[in-house]
Length: 312
Length: 312
Image (tube, rainbow over all chains, first blue to last red; front, side, top):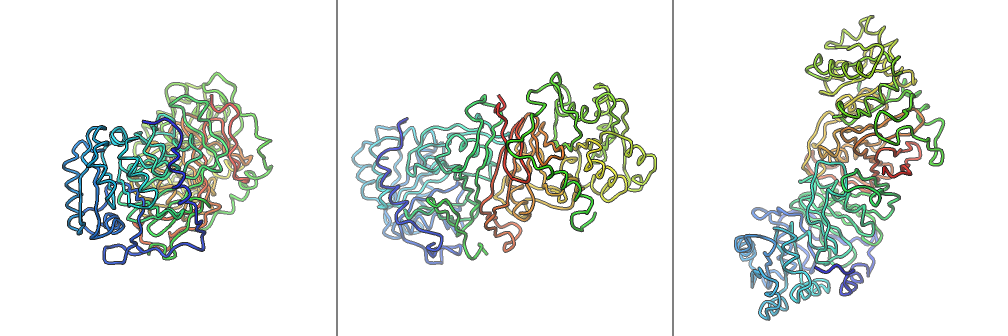
């Protein structure tokens, strides 16, 4: 895995993320104010970071949004189940869902070896598909197989250019930043050993993503992680909840739970660099926003934009 | 339990807390920069809010500080074990500890009925003692037995005037604010039903205390609680950790874990008042500080003051 800085390829994404700047008064009329598949949904391509355990049975709101944003009945979907130790099973599960929704084409890119990422047939599909879905499993496995491969470069660039919709859930969400939380614990005072950080796939480099967030009590580990990365945003995504990026500089929230934004821009102090791995961490001045369905966060202005309907 | 506003008696405490104002440059040289009983410790009276599971065997730093602040070998200590269903056992445990340290007098005020709080003998001891220690157990039980009784009024007033050192651990800590967290859950998106709030003993009214804090993953419940009480400070205290107030406007941190301060002063938004009990909460703009041993928090200026030694 690359230990280098943020790849140059992402500068284009940053431009897309931050221009045009969308202020608090210019908040877009969201297309998914109500749950369920019956409402009109945005067809824009997006990067969708899903906190795991997304609804696969009832409203399937998040997966349906992925389907619609991938082109609906014209969608050509690539499922990457490589995070999982049972890629065939999990790949098939998602194939059934998107088939049932009416996707035109679905391929499971069952990559179990980095060499496969140079396979011209797989690359050709990645070149022509309209949506890519990365399943859950183990984020270290996923990065180990995909990072810095021609296939992943292609997917990343196409997602960053807005040519495809790229979604990842659970482990598939964890890999989205330049840095990635590989694992960690809970039930302890914030401390360095509570979280393992390594390199991710750098789809949206400035995010440090954690998933199954409040469901698995991961606030202390994300705060511990962000103390050492005050140039990033900590993004904690609950289960069946999605942080969605259309490239307009906004993080949009969709789904059942919350998205917690930890903004360390005004951090005044941390003892992180002067203590042992298990010593308790001091962190002065984190700003925290908890967002629900319909809310947004302006990444450049660093302010939340709450839904007028208050989710009621 | 009183459902009325903040009792008038506490205005004196507020004066003591906020005058003289102690700024960042006037931070006192803390007397407990190093762990262990061998270091000189402050003998000032204080209100000590302990996050539960304080060390009772080895360094016993927090309990020893309580002992010293209660007068050391001149200490006359009242133990209130009423939160516990086994008051005799837990009372005896603390009696042994303070006896071993050398306290001059120790009485267990085994209150199991509100009528006992009018007993002249108990009141007389509460009038003459130098330290009061409230054990763990059930905070609802403790408040049910003590709130608005002559005995508790006496203890509160003496503590607020700085005449005695008053400590509470676990349930004994939970009761310290005007409002109290009576119970709650974890492992969920922040929501109203995640936390039960009732009235506490109002020792330091402006605090909303939670204990066993990161140990029991209580960040989401304290944020949920504070969303509805933006005039308070949320104070989450880890196990074997103490928030200590000498009446100079500073919260001082002592012990093994962290104290998390949630400051909702700049809260810009919450959907709290417009949603159902289990709907996810949105909360815009919480400020959070995580403090370790030796750190302080200035309650009036609302700023953390970190130890120069960074706890190393």
